Image 1 (cartoon, rainbow, N blue to C red):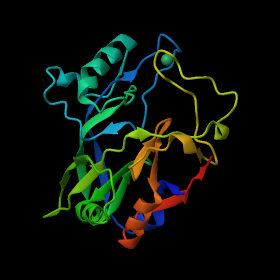
Image 2 (tube, rainbow, N blue to C red):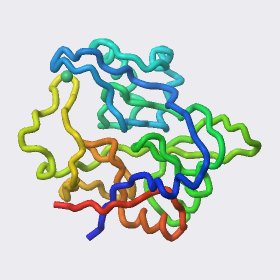
Image 3 (spheres, protein in one colour):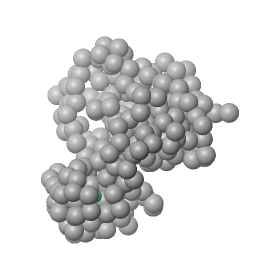
Image 4 (cartoon, rainbow, N blue to C red):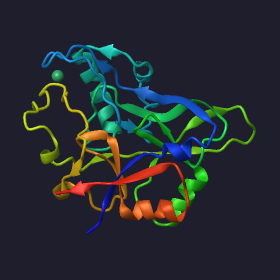
Length: 241
Ligand SMILES: [Zn+2]
């Protein structure tokens, strides 16, 4: 049986690279201000679609600034994006699209992280993984301004939500998601368990469907990284049920 791993930043490895990066995706859905269903004001994390291009939308200016909006405006903008987004993905408030844009300096290493849920791969690292036939790399090149000459290129894989955490590792008394906006009050369990019945076929790396900040890979992906001696990711094996 294939094993699955939760990917987190290997801080001991990334700390050896004295670089930093400050970037955000070009387009975003607004956050939601006081949902008419549940009252929550929120924006989701981990819903990033770097390969989705909104530049042809007549209203693309409405997607440039992160801000909270009332439900009707959020829902209107969401429906404008939906035909451009991959089919069947949730588009919660705060979903991001298009290339990362910003500044960077120094050496960022083969893998670099922005927060704990956004993984970037240097071009040579991506190419090494592709040579090992790891599946699932659509994505986008980050548009980073470096100060140094001939800076490296970084790729953000578009990791779509698939699979889910098993209900056994979630609190039994959890309230179901809001029927209007999808808000759910859930923190990451201490010991996450993958639902073995909902694992996507033919994908070596993805995000969890009900926990988009968790990046999960197959053993194949992990082995490709380890064999290429690429540092920056720690692989934590996930229990499955
Ligand atoms: Zn709600």
